[in-house]
Image 1 (cartoon, helix red, strand yellow):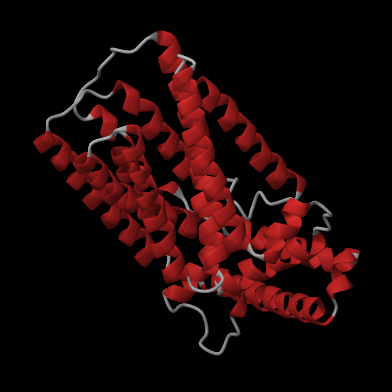
Image 2 (cartoon, rainbow, N blue to C red; image 1 turned 45 degrees about the horizontal axis):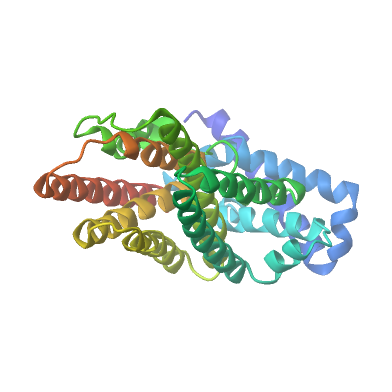
Length: 333
C-alpha cells in the first residue's frame, strides 16, 4: 500500500476510534443518550463505516501488519462495534408489544418458543391438509401466516440487521463466489428429475417450502444462533447446527424410512453448520434463505435414488458443507 493511502487509513481509524469511545461512554453512562440527535449522528457514521466495506479494508490492513503497532484499534474488533450498534438500536426501540418484550427479555427462550410453534404447527397443518385430500393446502396458509407474523415483527421493531435481512458484508469473491453453496443447493438435481406429481400439488408444495426455508433460517439462525452467540460463538454454532439437523427426525412421524431419516439428520446438521458460518461471517441470511428454499422446493422433483446412491449423495453433501463452513470460519474468525 502507498504511504499516503496508509496515512489516510491511520487518520480515519484514529478519528473513528475516538468517536467509538465517545459513543460507548455516552451510551453506558446515559441510556437516554439514544434520544440525542448529535449522539445518533455519531452512531450513523459508525454504522456507515461498518457496512460500507471500508471497515473490512482497514481490518485486512491490520491483519497484514501494515498498521502502526501503537495505534489504538478497538473499532476494528467487529464484535465490539457490531454489538455496540445492536445494543444502541435495541435501547432505541420502545415497543409495548408482548412479543417484543418477550424477545428482549430472553432471546433464546423466544427462539425455542418459535421452534415449538413452527414444528407443531407445520406437522398439524400437513395432517389436516392430507385429511381434506389437498396436500400442503393448510400448510401453505399456516406458513404464510407465520411468515407474515415474523416479517411484521422484524419490520416494526427495526430488526432487519439483527436478523440478517440485508446484503452480505463480504465480497462474493472472498466467499469463493458461493460455488460450494451452489453445489450443495443443487443436491436434488444430482440424480435426475421425476415429474410424477400433479401440477396443483407441485405448486402448493413449492410455495410451502418457500415459507419453510424462510422461517427455518429466521428461527435457527436469526433467533437461536443470535440469542446464544452473546454467551459464546462456538456453542451457538454447534447448537444451532445440531438443532437444525435433529429437527428433521420429525419426518419419522410422516412415515419416512429410519435409515434415510438418520442420514438426513447428519447431512442437515452439516448444512446447518455451513449456513450458520455464512450468516456469522457475512451477517446476511439471504444466501442461506435462497439456498434453503431451492433445496426444499426441488426435493419434490428429485428422482428416487438407490440406498447406495443416497448414501453417497448424503456423504458428499456433508463433506462439502463442513469443509466450506470451516473455510469461512477460519477466514473470518
